[in-house]
Image (cartoon, rainbow, N blue to C red; front, top):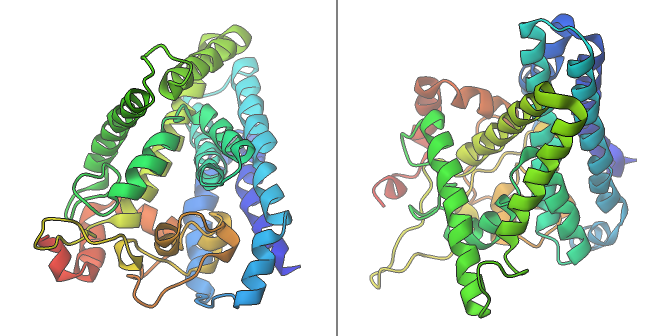
Length: 347
């Protein structure tokens, strides 16, 4: 039964369905649940820093149940978006209701879409990676697969990495620098891969071009079915999902930098280069994304067997709480700056 704890990750789309159906002030039920109720629960519940034993970890890594808990997110994310689109285009809604539904739908696209797409994007199976990219489609962020896997994991905790927030950088500044730098970085990586394979820009191997085509087609289909309002709602929800991801990126590596050797080479990525959080609710709802240090230490590890390392810098709060704190830069700096290792600040 303990393995079914990750069913709690579906609580966010469940609340979103109620938001869409009930409307009114209920439109804001999802952000209220994600960023008020969950943080309160994280304050109440104790943290869990236990790791699995070797044999138990091996058994859980082979258990297909954990994979299916990810796959189920595909119909859930698409159903949430379609339900929301049908509601906003067939009902007379007040502006505040539209804003609430955009936030609710966007949170689902970020948590159950991009986050799960990220997990599947690291799998060895081509089919699983395909499903991961499919989950990135509604958020219009398919290039994330290329930049994250072939860029971020190589450059994490360096100034060359778009997804590593600098010391004293605000989350609002980071949103702009990370979004645009990641997109151009993905293109740079793609063009290098084409050149290495002696393929031209219009080659069938140009994944970035395919992602552009898929996403434009996706938006065209929405426009044809749901009209202009549906198109604008879909884009706005995608933006919210993207900002959810980028806020997570912000808190995951804030201020942490790899040091350089005398040969001007960066030290290898280690457990100390990502913030870790053992707060239970955030761990479950985000499929152990909060054990990010171990994920970077070995990116092929499945979410259910990620470990906590003593050398990893620990966040004082869970990821949902930290995301809220990041929106208030003076408060964020006051809490986090003193936790950043001094040698990394001057790196």
